[in-house]
Length: 223
Image (tube, rainbow, N blue to C red; front, side, top):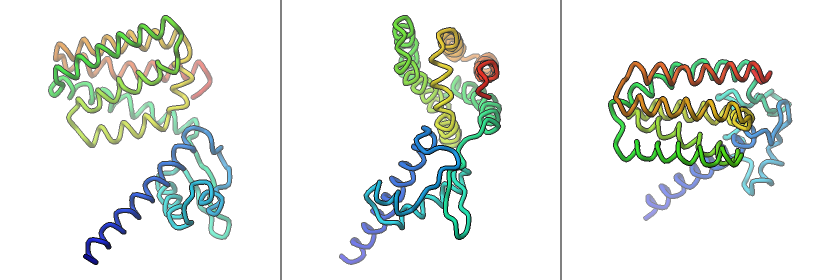
């Protein structure tokens, strides 16, 4: 009985740490916590309704991730995502998204293809009505589906993280009608290539899709 209670206590502790970590991480990536902003353990603990221990553990984990800087005797502050980080993420994504689309040609199910086609239809519907929040959500779903269809949990995990890192930038670019329209056409071309199981074409189109985003970021002054 004691062993079961101990296991539950350990599980609860790590679950709590995970929730605190994700809460702070989300606020950094969303811009709620600004670059160089001081992150006080006591303030965060009160804000999240927890003790200082899971907050301290979360900040250490975020430091390893490069989102937080911890200075001895001073505390933690937000490092955030710089313009160079954004550029690097998109360059790396261009290669990995290509690989992801290539592998999706081998592993994607008919149900997943139907889901992608539904996303394309809904994207067109919302674009004509300038529903940009819905377009961002559908863009997330599109890429998440491709990641899962690759059949690689490692690739899925890495690309999902990258997607979150640049969420704020993506919201800006997809709010531009000309980029939203171009992005939807690029998505449609990728889906057609995957449906045809054309690995080389799917890889090239997915790579080009991300490179076009980089070009758009440069024009917008966001990269």
